[in-house]
Image (cartoon, rainbow, N blue to C red; front, side):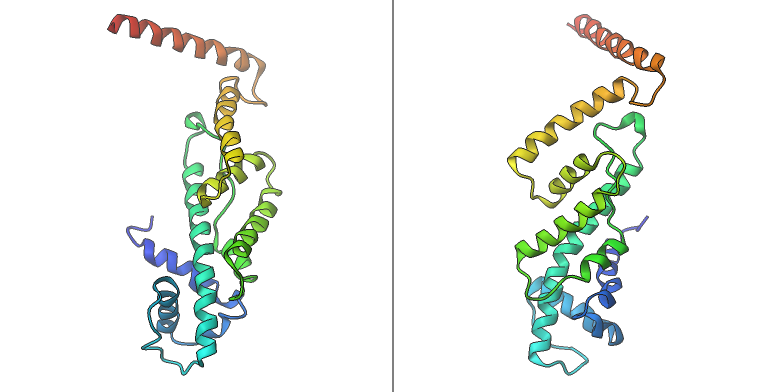
Length: 211
């Protein structure tokens, strides 16, 4: 859909959240090139040359530090967005894990941006993400645990215990799929396992024939 314009899409997450953050809000009324320059400074540590507005040194520091924290949030929200799109576009018959329903929209980015301060450390930013998506998961009718575990995978924060639990879920999900799902017709639930056994027998026969 983006046609190779991933960088522009990523930048839009930050640009659209400016007015939601009290530190970054003044940039919304200034040259857009200043916004881009501060993002570069936050991501690459480059200098403050070519800014169009006469910022005070302390203001530059606060803006850079705020954007540095916003970049981590942008990274997570975009990963969530991508996972949501991929899951939504997967046919139910081809799913191998529970549907991922958490979203990485501009709304999510803005709600997180409201609470970002330049003095926050990495742990506080991760806690902010934890709290936000825990609240989002509580609105789901099903699959909250699976969605939160998938989120830790996307954030690269999964613990060994969470990893063990995540390894269990696809198998349980596939068994449920094979049984026809919780709300399917009873005859479908009977036919599912029979169909699965039949296919396994066919694979066994094919293997013997190839041998």
